[in-house]
Image (spheres, rainbow, N blue to C red):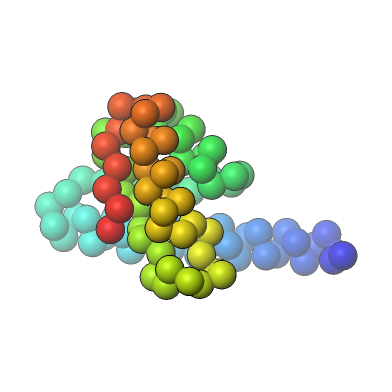
Length: 99
């Protein structure tokens, strides 16, 4: 159990980190001559990704490969990520690339 203000602080920190990482990704894309739009949303990761794809009519989705396959810290194992990528392609018209 934790005090509610601490949870809000952690949520804000995670959101800020997400915004920062997306800003870095967009800057890298721009340097490669690619126009990219980024979105930071709250909720269940898989559901929110699909929702954003539909809302913004994304044509292409890039998912990051887990660094360490055996790591317990990763939200996805590679096999699960590949399954999720297939699910995205089946449910939306977006093409998914795992990098």
